[in-house]
Image (cartoon, rainbow, N blue to C red; front, side, top):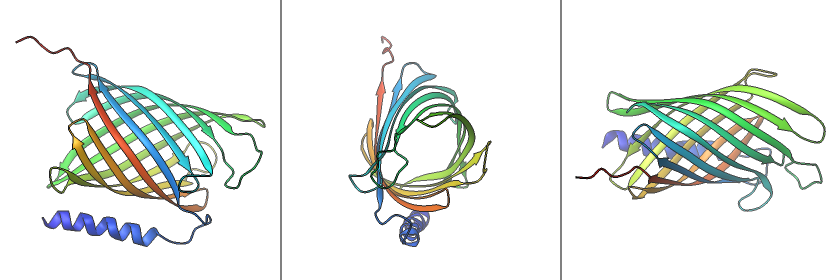
Length: 226
């Protein structure tokens, strides 16, 4: 019970400490849908979409659609390869500037374990970004590392906290970091929802973002005959 209380206090403290004035006047939002579709004991497909706004439900920032393949090496370790398509509006204010189109490929390793009684997960990702706009086409590569935990408060409610570091292999290496805290609700074994807050430090901006996510699991494996 003590560690549950500590996790709640940490989440609340995070929300309050980063709810501060930033270069944008409005709190932005990310609306997200994640899918994991089991096709065999070791392989699964992942699908997802994100809609991001500079404000709560207006002032479009980007949309992101992706899909990929997961391979479970063992119950603690998963390999993933993915492709994503992004349509990005880089201007905070409304303008006629042409959006940037990005084709994103990544390879990823996730690993989870117990640290004393605390569940811990690590995510290592290598991203390859192919960016196209009216002025220039470019290729950027970066490494991402996420460290976090997800703690069940009971059979329905859980708390999630993580921090993700970004390291760019071109240009300025350290220009982005994401600190995230959320409460989750398990609807059933196949669906859960998550409401969280993220402090997004990027390009010398310190941005406040609310996140609403839906996680869906499906299983397409053939059932074995008894």
